[in-house]
Image (cartoon, rainbow, N blue to C red; front, side, top):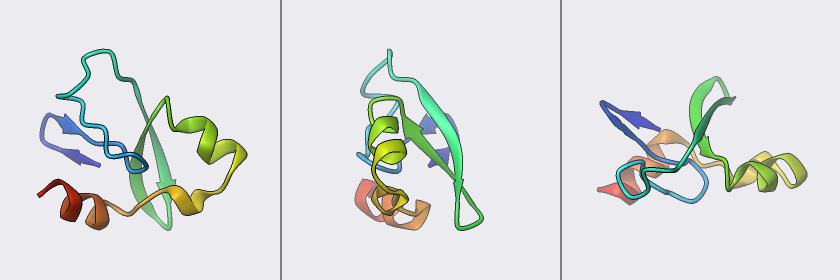
Amino acid sequence: MRDQNLVVCNVCGLKSSEDSNAVFIRAHKNGEEVDICTSCVPSVIHGSGMVVKSNEQIKAEVE
């Protein structure tokens, strides 16, 4: 999820402000753009897209 200059992983909730070395990949799920940190990419590739939360879910967790 992106909110101005902040990027949040749609899987684990890692914020770009928490880790300056974090790298995020932009992806699409259900027609929505989502962001996944590279640490979570293997769980999505080898597991399931079910672990990817919607931007609305992530916003609720961040606030």
